[in-house]
Image 1 (spheres, helix red, strand yellow):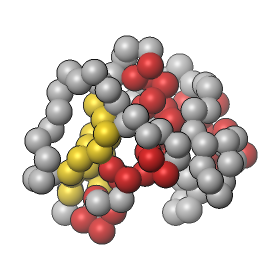
Image 2 (tube, rainbow, N blue to C red; image 1 turned 135 degrees about the vertical axis):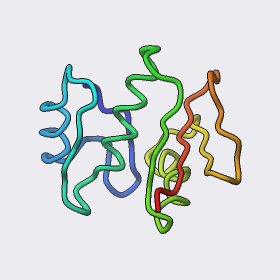
Image 3 (cartoon, rainbow, N blue to C red; image 1 turned 45 degrees about the horizontal axis):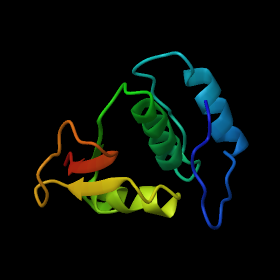
Length: 110
């Protein structure tokens, strides 16, 4: 899978652990990444979603997160170099469906 992200600090290549997770997930739907904290689940998820979006397989990325992380998700794509991706959170923004641009939308599961 192509790596679409470019981070000011972390660069434009996946870390070895991220590369391995992407390789193991290749061709599998509903695949979960069970990585420890700090190993890059957020950029892997954003990159995977963006690839699927570019290939017209998905429209919106919905992330269920703890309250403490919910506000971070809409900011993450811009941090990773995807300025064209729009973010929102429940209940502050309506859930956009069938949009003409990539969207990451976060909700609290607690």
